[in-house]
Length: 193
Picture: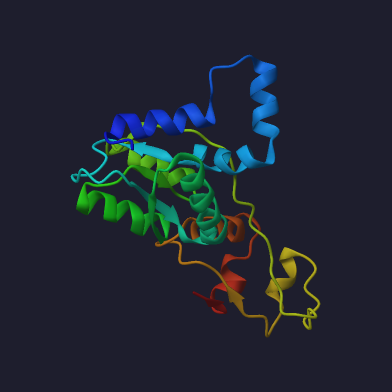
């Protein structure tokens, strides 16, 4: 079993980026089994790696991607024997937890803003990007209000559910999208967090 923080991070790095010829790397990365582990590349190694000698990796992960991450964690443990203990919440909440506890091995926020903040505070040892969130409009089954574009949410009677900009990455991104499209004022009174 792997013990030290450095050994854990190196094991994850070796699984994600083995030292092989480029064609072998591509073939490995395109293998469906290994694609699961590629998502872990977006995780960030935190300085300190926690205060305990527990061999499990402590993952702080944005709550919006919990279902696929739970599946990846299970497959990762089968492949490596390394346990990953996740904490799911909004990216800002997670960063606050990291600051308060001074513990953790991996940080997977939903927005680059939180990466920058963590770097400024000295928590990031290494980073890799492997995935991006894409904001979408979700409508009620059957789309009874006939919402086909972003501008349709200005219509009377349309309630808009968004993430809280102070708590999660998608909330901040949504606020920016509304502002850039002139929707902040017309929609603000109908926003539900």
